[in-house]
Image (cartoon, rainbow, N blue to C red):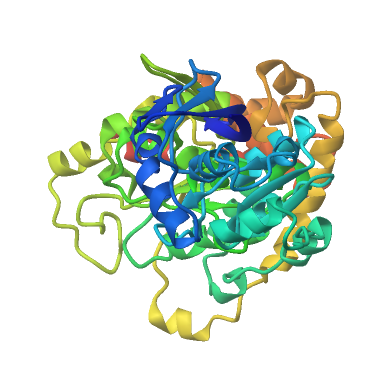
Length: 515
């Protein structure tokens, strides 16, 4: 008897429907075709134990299983459930009249329990696109998949429940998630708030400008000055995710298996902070089984690199292209995958190896050669891609104890949202540009016109600081954002002066140290 069940294979962000064909004839052999990886080939032993625990026996027959399309590699243990149901139906243990209506995905434990799988959300989107009536997933994945409307999503605890459902012996209700209600409910729940930060008003202003225009930023200061503390609070002042952004972000985290149990949609912008020992593959994605890297997990959010010079220099250099193009193309001999990676790049660093160069309260013990070698770990091209560079000093205890609570994140966020609304209106005719940081050179000439006085200020700064053409563009973009925060139609001299002030590493005293 020939039976067909349906599943899906996830390769990058692409999902392909897989037809599992099971044929039983006289014999004792088990044949699996269709480019299944080790986890798929090992599924026979898991399925056999799960069947026995559920009250059924693995059939003694010549079993041929084909997973079509046969030229597409199938990876992971999510094929256990459709394989088990196909074998049971081919052996006439369960009826096969409903199998064409459902897509199935799930890993089987030896006792028949369904374990969660990666990529449930994109698989659900594919099931709806293929006009399946429903999708059967492990219970831990049900809220994630139930985000997709016009599709019945059933979360099952074990193989026995799936058998009962497909045999019409027990009625199960599909899980329904009020996507919009849950999404908007969790948008403003942040663990960190800028009200906790006392002092450092100049750095908070720089972070506000960065959030308003989507600019990359680097903070330079001694240990304990609050660099990491302020970076962790950045998502709390960013504009809230739209539903479309949330769905795209959730898909990436679903494929990577990073969603928490019971999560439906990611409602807050992601904040990723990889350790400086991270490898190139872990940062950009790929591997033998291709997975999104940290830059894609930070899509629509923030990638924070603490102690930037401690990262491997070659690892940092791979960030240059994603920072410009906001997508990462990973090409290997066996596959080629494209992941989105539109993120804000936030970095922090000490001014020298010991951390106290220029600190009035500590003595620096580093030699000029050590400082120059430390600074040279960050290349000029990478630094040119960072729009805002600001110094930060530690606050003395006497000032820290007297400082009043800072402005709350909610207050800062209101100004950021207003500035982003201006940019949304400005770029409404462009599908790929959403904020000032993404402006092309043509747009810079169009939206960043300067009067004679302001142009003279910029020209003087360019000549004295010996700035590159890319730094010139960065200053104009940041000045445009500062003007938007002030609800000013034109860039004024005060706006350009503040933007020039955010190029601290271009000053001669920093240049002498190697940058």
